[in-house]
Image (cartoon, rainbow, N blue to C red):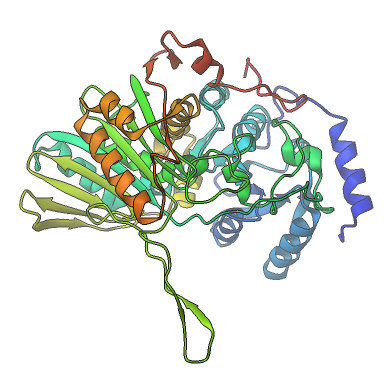
Length: 493
């Protein structure tokens, strides 16, 4: 099937006529001798890996593809069918979910679609693999958990470190007391994020993409940035900044070592979008402190380099830029440090852990990737036990929500002189350390925080049981959003 703009729009309009899904449209339950039929939704980025993984998995058939961009859809269909059998294609998730020939969906759409796609799929009787963060806000993430439990569906979160055997072993080893009392966990997301540019006028909408479907639950607004794809991460209506983009992985690992299975009772963030002026909204530099009773979880985001690239003119008269390196905190660039009384752990990637004693000597290494995250999802689909999942939706919700509450503190903050910020947080040793190192880092990038001030976030208190803030109605409003009909996350799932 070859797509044209006319056929794409006709297909989308027909799908749009059905604004709500039946409560339950159960696919045929996969039996012991039948393939599990999977549909992948959204694959202009991470979704390509979903297609690759499921395509080569024994006992699984990639049965359908869904993307709002007909050019992306057409290309993926051709590639999949070149290697295997025929695959159905859809531009509208609602039409896909009506199919009784699909057992499970795997979604890697932009963040603002994650929860709604998962809930609709669960209500339609499908199992779900949903990429991180599982939600765009705290409330809708909890709704995915409720839907999965109510309808008895398997729902895996795309935090693949949860399937790393080495990290499992390290968590168990530290719980045995091998490094003593846990003092704090610090996640780092030091990942280069250059300016996305500044446009003077609205960017034309890509002809191949259904605008209504792309925005879905989010308000439709003019495209005021040069590039639609990926840079949606840096706009609040659709993304969650790097805290909820890359950082969700390290946030999840840090919370795992802390052994916390609820949201933090206190939250504070400090940061800003600094070093350039562009069309992005989310901070490229920040730290967040989650004040758990046992030990704090601190998270740091840096999108600027260790120092700006040096430009030199070579013998040929051409300019050459030096490679930009990123900062590192005790060996962690994009990773986690967990501090104990008797030493610390370094988690430098998705699978490995190294333990050090009090003198900084390496004493033990853990490093196995395990069975694979997609394979673990299929295993649970076959067993029908969500407890077989390494990253059940509840774990995904909690770690995603920690990112959201950190962002809420930041968004409610006000710019302040660094001396004022120091005074406000001076009782917190780890927060003060994060602030001092952040200011030093920014100075190396030519940012004077006295002139271009940081935002001191709102000090927030939360009831972890109700997942609502205490005495802050403005913050409570930011736990959810105004959904655009008909793309509304339902109150009753």
